[in-house]
Image 1 (cartoon, rainbow, N blue to C red):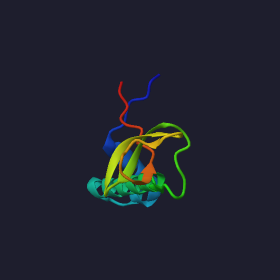
Image 2 (cartoon, one colour):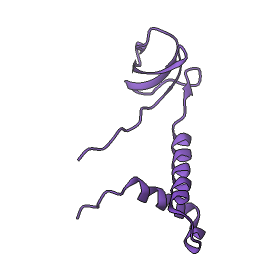
Image 3 (cartoon, rainbow, N blue to C red):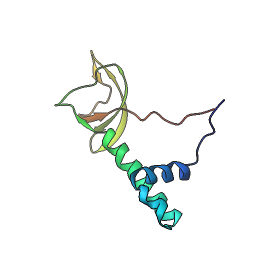
Length: 103
């Protein structure tokens, strides 16, 4: 049995109720509840995705990464033998997001 996909609002409401279970005892507007859920989700995603300075470490495998170069974020290829494909100086990098899921 396949599970039905949830709406963004449903996921936000679940996140808010996990963090603030007392919301079920009070009549709180759905809009405010969603905002709490979205804030929690955004904070968690931001904590997971961190810009890593190249002076700290380089990617462990070849692939496409997001990089910070010349004051802007760009997508670049990285190869362990050749480095980043960007001609400018890459100062930070991070993993790319998973991207959307398609049916």
